[in-house]
Image (cartoon, rainbow, N blue to C red; front, side, top):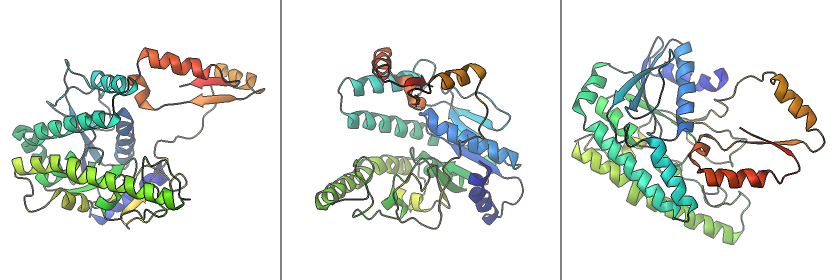
Amino acid sequence: MTLCMLPFILFLSTLGITKAAKIVIVPPIMFESHLYIFKTLASALQEQGHETIFLVSEGRDVPPSNHYGLQRYPGIFNSSTTIDDFLQSKMRNIFSGRLTILEFLDILDHYSRNCDMMVGNQELMNNLKQQNFDLLLVDPNEMCGFVIAHLLGVKYAVISTGLWYPAEVGAPAPVAYVPEFNSLLTDHMNLLDRIKNTVVYAISRLGITLIVLPKYEQIKRRHKVAPEQSMLDLIHGSSFWMLCTDIALEFPRPTLPNVVYVGGILTRPARPLPEDLQKWVDDSRAHGFVLVSFGAGVKYLSEDIGNKLANALARLPQQVLWR
């Protein structure tokens, strides 16, 4: 993790932040896996003497820690309408056959409504301004951080699970050999594959330009944030991009000088297995074993879907460890 953090620590020096910096983190209002990344980053920054504050809603279960502080605000989710309930309903709808794009649009709507509540909360914004932050960290999965950074007048950097907006960042992917996300293609494409990749790329760009960005443009106009700049300008204004992936897992693609891969940020040194688990591994030598991990989203699966997955895995000749 220390090596992964080196580019970011060097970036802080370029801002003139050579001593303790005060950093505000704006994570997405949902998806625990993104929060894990920011928590790890906050812990590493705290070890280097910096102070980090998470901007999280009152309805989100984020326990206090010695590694970071919490700035709570009244958001779209609360004790009666929780994030878990919302995401479980999305998973049920998707597995029952509802179009995934409709669920995505509903999530996007919740993102923008929550952003509108944050930016319009004068008490919250004034409190943040008084804290004189040196830097704001944004997750582009939810673009509200770009708006808040300009409202606070601070520099901002991005940490992302991937380069989801290559054209918007300023490094459009060559569709001839860089497969678009969700295209199910590789970098070895024939003519038909390249046509398909171009269509998927065009649809993605249209979706961002016509659906995603306008929602935040409305928030900017409503609250008079950086009226002379567009959302694209705000995205381009990020000082630094950290991608939580690795070039060994990505297809070769052009990036900008301020884009750095920090894959492996969540890894830890290997430790001996507990005695009972080591015995289980030793007993599975005949056919081997399979480690199954679906990430943080698995907790939103219904019991019925979970049982179907378990029954399917039980048919494998290997032993299965589902964590």
